[in-house]
Image 1 (cartoon, rainbow, N blue to C red):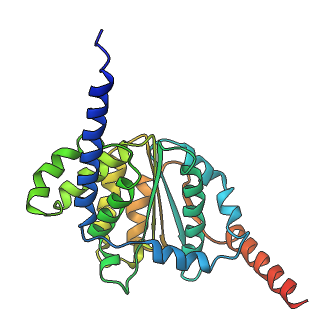
Image 2 (spheres, rainbow, N blue to C red):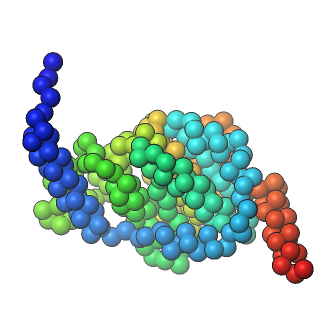
Image 3 (cartoon, one colour):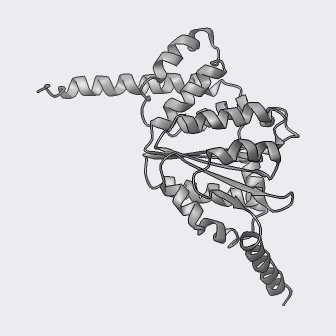
Length: 255
């Protein structure tokens, strides 16, 4: 039976771990990766309080949140309020993950008008930054990538970055990734390939939610990856209920 560490040894180990965590955090902070927070704040501002609840209560969403290695596709026509509804999903997940250090959430909004925010590689780096900021210790396997790249001050190539993302996803019991507006990326084939790779990792802890227009190439790639009926088309009850809430709000203001 292994002996317990003496208090002074345990303290040294803790300090060494903290030092590595800080060094790796500084390394990742230098990567070229967009901050999705401004896009999220903009989408939040367009969401009326009380809207989006029908999606959060949808059985497919609650099952996705709970199931292992789960994927859900939120699709809709232009103007169906996808980004606004996605912002509600992100808020719900952030509140849920805040209750447990073994849960983490990261998100990304693609934007055709922003050069960096339409690149799949930038998405991967952004997700890595967000997930690592939620780590309380250095995940197993990450230090090797740090040792390889940090001395030269480089960020890892795409294949290594995907492996870093996989390591970080596995470091939590539940990791939620939310990606909005896949159709806004001109490198769609590459992006959809990344999503397929993530699903093929078969990580029980991964919960992946994506939103986009209902376009043929996206549908052809995502539908084979979906389990059960996890394509939630954002129309009818999801949008109509929000419209009723908005109308009630406007009528109340006019009284």
